[in-house]
Image (cartoon, rainbow, N blue to C red; front, side, top):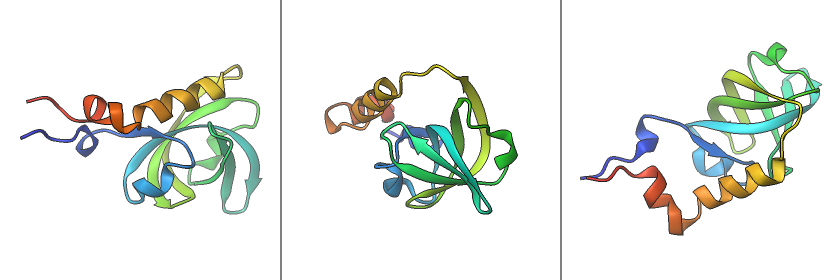
Length: 115
């Protein structure tokens, strides 16, 4: 029986997909746009806004990041760590790639181990 790869790794998501992953660890490519008392409001690859909490001092608004964390609510992530992706990133291309990864035509081939 095939074991879903999501049981031992994290999937890349955008803000639209986030509600499907509440309680799971994900990777969100984003750009910080506003620091609030609750954390950073970031813009995801699809243009939606997500609240990132914990370790928020590691983000700056002049770069793109991949935030790895647990989806706490449909629009917030508790960050475990982040990776700086630099200041020049093609976010529409990132979003297209994420959408293709989650397209039902390809999802099983990408996220389910073959027997």
